[in-house]
Image 1 (cartoon, helix red, strand yellow):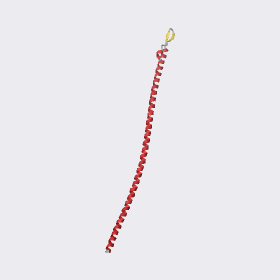
Image 2 (spheres, rainbow, N blue to C red):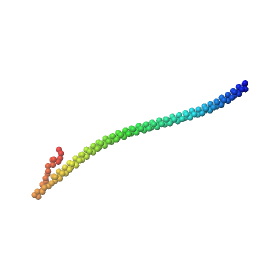
Image 3 (tube, one colour):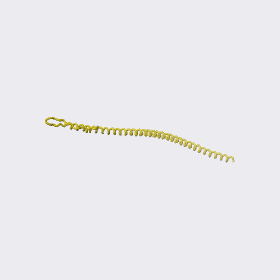
Image 4 (cartoon, rainbow, N blue to C red):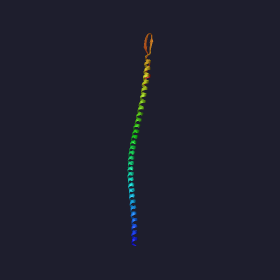
Length: 137
């Protein structure tokens, strides 16, 4: 019957309308979720970009630190060489000073020996010892 057919069509139309509204609401929720996921991806991408910049800054700082360390090591090696050279020169100077002291002592001794005055019959005689053995060469 036609009434029944109209009632069934009306009932089916209401079910279709209700389902359509549910699908529309689900689509809106899905769209909102997709937008949220998209926003999260953008935030993650920004975070990754920031981390990449920080890693690059750390890398540059590490390179600078390595360069400074190498320069410092090079300067330390140079200082060590200069210190060793200065120590060698100080040793040579010390040896030269000791030789000067030894020679001055010999000169003093020879002078002291040469100054011996012997009094003989109220006359003074200056005795000069042989000093040729006191000086090298």
